Image 1 (tube, helix red, strand yellow):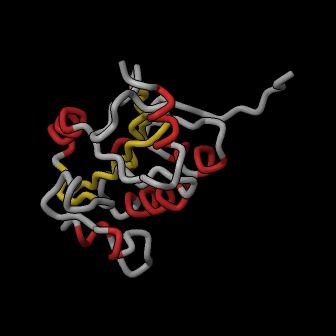
Image 2: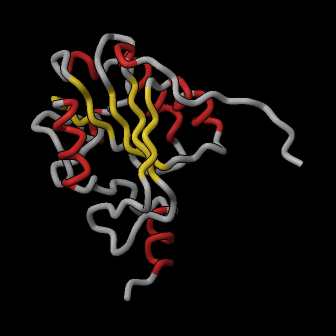
Image 3: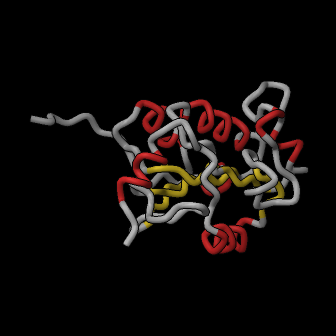
Length: 166
């Protein structure tokens, strides 16, 4: 039996943040979106022939996902660290150039980055259960979602409403 704390220790630490996307999950989305670029990958976990490696600084202003994807759609399984906001911001801004950027991340509705950037998505798809990332011994410690930034699909399904919490 696997030790659930192993995954939590790994996924919440900065020791490893390049958790590979399960191939079957990627394949299902690739069938729909036909990705041409993996915007954050290493040779060991790239899902597309064309990818942006960490040494290229995918978040840098001089890296255009739209150009690197040759106008095709972009897959993003960003590093799982506390810096999710810049990744979603870049995904959203690149989508404004007429491409779809599809992001696999945790459904962290209580975070600032979620409300600033995820809520700008055309679609948010919640994944039932826990994703088992490549190299993990058990499911992730938090629920995951797929965030689709694509202006051609824009029909918001979620809205934020400030309500009393007590």
